[in-house]
Image (cartoon, rainbow, N blue to C red; front, side, top):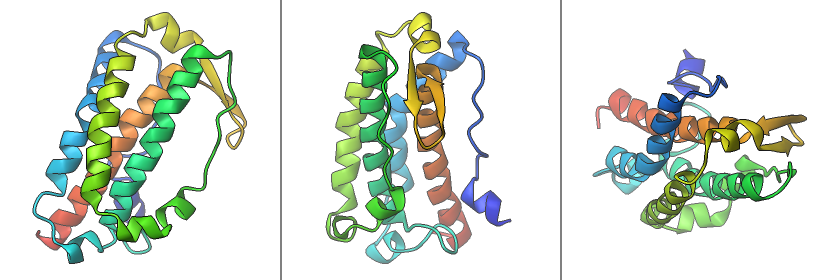
Length: 176
């Protein structure tokens, strides 16, 4: 049960490139900010402070995490496109989620950031070809492996849906 709460849509599993899925994932990136805005609609401050599962991040932490993570994702994908197999910089997501700004900055700031960021990200993704997605790579030092630009696209498309599903699951559980 705990794994279901942690991964309500399952874990991301890389799959082979196909054009229909590419279009879907790019649209997932495009529309994530709207999905985030909708899933937190009418939440009050106490609800924002509620963890989505026991031992999990609060709704507020999830929203700020999406902004932090997707800023990194956008940069990683652009570096992957312009450099020859760059090594990406990992970061401690839990440390980021527990920084003071997560408590003091309103979530609408991160949602606004997501709107701007994802508009730029969508614009960038529109120029990419099948060859870009299937030939360009980054090296992930924590995972100790090379990842295709295609894998990054799928991972970040999944990532947004994953956190929206966590918040939606909490809303259903709490009957908000």
